[in-house]
Image (cartoon, rainbow, N blue to C red):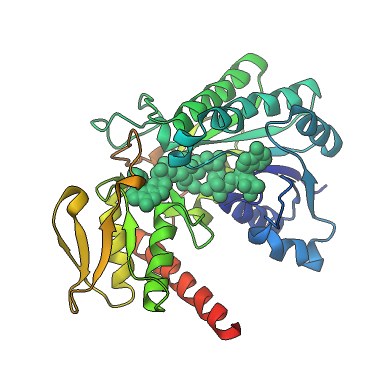
Length: 349
Ligand code: NAP
Ligand code: GDD
């Protein structure tokens, strides 16, 4: 019998890679999609259109803030595995829409867990937890499953609830429920308002003459950046174990936003020379002295997570998981993809 998976957040970056992975393992994949006024399925359109997935890939209208839709879908499809990836996932935006973030990123998890429990569906459950849980304890590094949490945003606080309610349902009801505590993972499918994609897209646009310069917020923030394709394999592996548990997925390397900018421009043969400090820091093309990067305080957050560095040794040991793509390869992949994408647009317009 083919296994049946349900993915919330299937239209997102991770949902699209996870769908591809599970389809390659011959799963039937069901996803929950929100109604959009215009499209919204770009990242999975190739799967929707592929005739070989006609009887394997299914989408259902629903919303993780709507317990009726969750309960109906769970009852109807009786999944073997549920991957809860849906969230208002932007940390900066969570300060602007804190209450909605609490609903979509926090309270939604109990709605899904209760839909499973009340419908008596025997399924394994993956919760998309995050390194944002560690937030404000920079002295503790690298961060592991044992590091205390200290979220620093409405997003982090909402994810804290989801983390603990997942542990609670495992302990209270014996549910096979796991938290993947994932550090930042990126790809050419990353949303354009996250810093890595904003940078790779800007590099491509500057090279094509569509954009003058790139404005960023905190250049000193350090992140442990990996490739999303590697991380969805870890999610899958967590649900293939004999026992449910929580795991960190990370690269164990950390880089500043400035490092990412340097590496991305390097990819197109531009070396950045930095001058000034704080909000006056600027990046110039070292050959032409053209201004390419400046700092705009509008991209600062009311509270910032300055430093993330993950210790993935538990996942490496127990899941036999290891990231394959390193920082330099990730930057190259993203810049190349954006250059190619823009090339295509120019060829047809
Ligand atoms: P993403 O690209 O922003 O995707 C989020 C997904 O959630 C989208 O499919 C979105 O649908 C859906 N969604 C949002 N609100 C919803 C609602 N009310 N009802 C139903 N669906 C809703 O995020 P991602 O990078 O793939 O991340 C996946 C998950 O992992 C998220 O929970 C995120 O918080 C978490 N996480 C991500 C990272 C990372 O570095 N990427 C690290 C740790 C944890 P629309 O397409 O309709 O907007
Ligand atoms: N988005 C953005 N835009 N971030 C900027 C900018 C900018 O112009 N300039 C500097 N930054 C800094 C942010 O302040 C942050 O310190 C860092 O770049 C990374 O920001 P994001 O790419 O927005 O990601 P994030 O780390 O806040 O959150 C992502 O990773 C989490 C895991 O640690 C998201 O994917 C979350 O959903 C995820 O949980």
